[in-house]
Length: 607
Image (cartoon, rainbow, N blue to C red; front, top):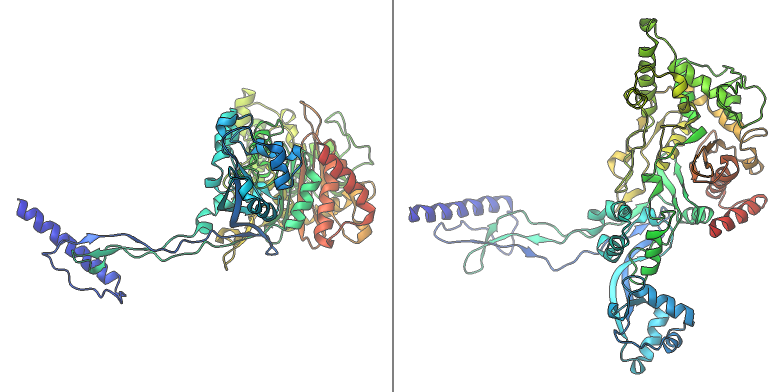
């Protein structure tokens, strides 16, 4: 029995060696030889010495945003007292800066002496000063590490962080008790494309005899692969500008190129520096981020779904046109017994004027025509008709990429929500609900929830007259292009002619008498198509929303802005959106709007 077992093992090794030799014929230093069945072979895994460098992250104009570089850290002594005044003189810091930097260098705010050593990041000039006076400071130690370095504070939510460098943040998150932040942590493109950024080492798999001679390979060798660079779709100058507009306010701004789905700016407010979660001396900043009531760590454009408000009237109008419930010339009376209308305006005798004035009663009746339409086969059963019509409405709306993830290249994305007939059956406790009980759908309120990415993509769909490419943050990996799925054009179920019918109304919104006429860019020759929204909020100030694109007839940028508790969409969200459009299309903002810029940025800093 023992002899048979040994013979079986030798035969198996010989077979493996023969197969490996056949699959790996190119062995110049160790030509394959026929294995001797009497010899026991050893399978080895040899790691090649070369270590791949992690790829860089660059913006759309090839400005480096993140790279792995040497970083000098000053290790503080464990023993007190530390002469902070003298340390400040050494480093060129004032006393306030010294105390703050030392406190931030502790593992967590309020930590005592036992928590040392802390680490302080130093500039090249500060390193030179420490080296020159090293004899006078024997208790200080300079440590050099290769870490991810952020060249700009912008785009924290999009760039994300390297998990291995964020362990201090994870520990702090657990300690604060705000567990949802830990669960919702956003590794950004650093995490999503980690395998491509990291590259991989080379491995060989020789099959050796007792003398160390190779007899083929027991597995295919793995070639060394350098980490690949990511070329983002973001424009870092536009990103920085948009972040200044939002600053400390809650909300988001997403700008994308509707022709390609490339995200030009991706802002989640309140904003924070991109290096805050990984820098070794930012414990104090992280503690504030973790406990702040406005939840700055939440990646709002991807993860937070809100009622869209009146901007959703664009979708309802497109569906109603497709189903024949209205035509571009349909007129409805501003009947405020149906729903209140906050705008004082002339009669909406067409869809264009309904959009221009954002007349709530107009769109109440638009949606009523969709939901209460009775097909010929259901003349006697209006309950069944409402169920069928709501299901049909939802089918068309979902073709906009709503109620599902768009597939953006970020680790986490929320799908939003569109109600179903079954949902209303359950929540109303009966199948006999009426349109009057769900009319809030007509003005983008109630149960509808969309993310910022979906809002921006909705604007891109209208700009393109019915199609879109999935929004994405990476336009190129290494020398190649984006991931294949971002090159697949997707179409809605709405005919392009019905989207074209929306454009005059969206342009009229920005003209005299429209809800956002103060935000027109006509003075610089840019025609903007837009739609404002003011989202009712029972728990505080209303939310401000705006979607739009420019130029209206040849769209190059689509923007969605949502400011929580911001008030009116026309006065809060629209100015931010059009200034981002102007900045992108012209490179600067006209002097006429500089006072807007100063007012908005100063408010963003205060909040």
